[in-house]
Image (cartoon, rainbow, N blue to C red; front, top):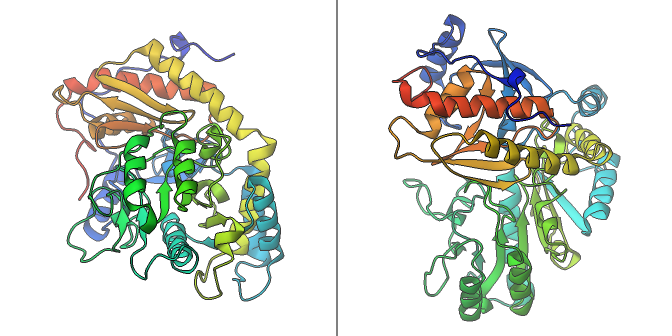
Length: 446
């Protein structure tokens, strides 16, 4: 039975009014700030090891991981089955590529396509590469099969989407990064002719755009549950209605499962929340190898994937035997341990606990299963996602943040007890944060 949100044994001690860094961590922070650029907004936590859902820093301090490396560590750290599969393969054969036939790749492709109902796959390393490659395939299909005039095919996305940060994937978002020169044209959340922004979940606007520009739209690229935007779930029936529009106007439907897949939303893939959905292609990454080796995947139907020739989509490290060994073990864990069902159950516990705790300065909790966001009221002095995140880290909980929110995507193997304990800490941080001035971590590094 799940522990109550008010269980006294889960209470937390009063947080320090002046949280400080240890000398060892402070030295790492100083060197990091001096020599490292790029990456995510960085917390001053020098991590050294991890097991299950617990991360340990250089001082031996333990943290409950409530972000899972941004929805990568779905199966926890050092899962014995996945870790052994990856480690054994390092000694057996670390790299083979696709210039030779890898029995592991054959097994993975056969198993994945059978499980999810697709015909073939292609692999890369990162999610951005998978998205970019899917765009390439969609454009080739548009010119060879749909008959769109050369250089006129448009890839349509939606407002507040996130598909990557390369020069090809950045323009898929509502606002592109500046000062990097020209991005890939004819792609993004704006209607080709009217320039109207296409909101996520608004089928009427999507219908209007398809009726005006359907002849030149090659694909509709969508996250079934938006991640970067703040774990936004569309209205029920939206994706099926979008699929109907795609079929009517001969437009490919491409689902981005990079963040939301592999049990994160309580289903093996997030588009499974609408059972009638049959995308033409799906992109996946992050959790598919359990976090042990980078790999991304495009799954697709025959009518699009068979257009792909050799030397058009490839990667030197794509289909690495290490990644494939980990990926096959990850599939076993996903199925044998009923990870999706566990995610749904723990998501219900998360929602129940937040409701019982009723923490201050919160506008809403939104999302699904263990893919949730706590939206904060930043009109209150001292209340910002970064400050709450930093304070939670000082008290042993690592949580993600967005522009106005805390983001929750812990390992799906987290225990009920530590799930509730982490929420207690976060609630207490929301109470304490308004009483603190600046403290270590309350401002971003670099």
